[in-house]
Length: 363
Image (tube, rainbow, N blue to C red):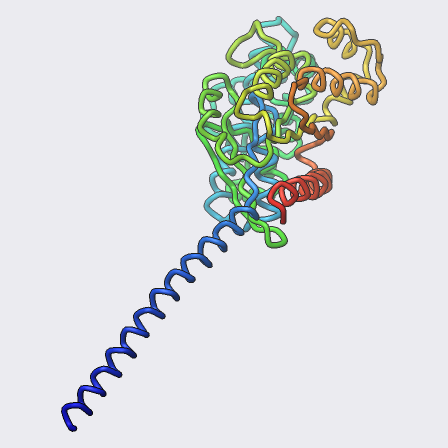
């Protein structure tokens, strides 16, 4: 009886153990299923935006705006790095204008000789250089050089550097967010910025826009929700930094035509940012600007009316976007250094992207 009882006890234990093991297997399988469902749900709530555009279109500025608005901004080491970049931007910009003035034989004031010598020989921007740069910025010869800057790849941000040179040249200089938005730093390779907004995870991938960098775009195409393509509107009278014979805006238009019709993007929604509209307005509002515009686009008949100029470009890019596949193209006029403008536009495209994304995933 004892053995039997023990046997019974043993039998009961074995049954309990086997039952527990069976339950454990079921729990593990259920856990895996839940994990899979959660991962799938997270994947569906992840938005991957690919940021494309030719060189100097404003992509980096847009990314910096996102970092300030939706991430942790710029920490001390990053600001220190941008401090050096902005100092160099300021010095290089004035050096370029001096060189243009000399090459074009523009008359420079005799009072500027010392300033020219000091700036040309400088390797780093120092506090004492600010007075020389301010003196040169008032020189009529330098002003003439500035008016033809588009032919010599002088950044439009240079006027911002000169206006703030006393602050930028200070030894204790710490850049503000606005300063950082104006910094010119060429993007090489692939950069990714991630943040969470209203329960949705955004990942924005930025790749260099120069021709040598474009081959890297192909590595970023997987699982892209939408593509944001930036165009610098003011570049209609500029050539590529890497090719003086190719117009920047024509290159951007042709590149847009090719990339939007690529097989891998046949079902991807596209967002077009006609960027630097403030600089475009400055140029197109003058007769000389319209003349330069018509040299590249002779079919333009909008004169100095900014709205007609913007409409003209919208139609150009819409035509380039033609595709046998029915897919949307969302167009926005932007100014990437204007935080209010970027915030408003990004909110608008976020609502559009989320609606399309949730619809596609039946959420």
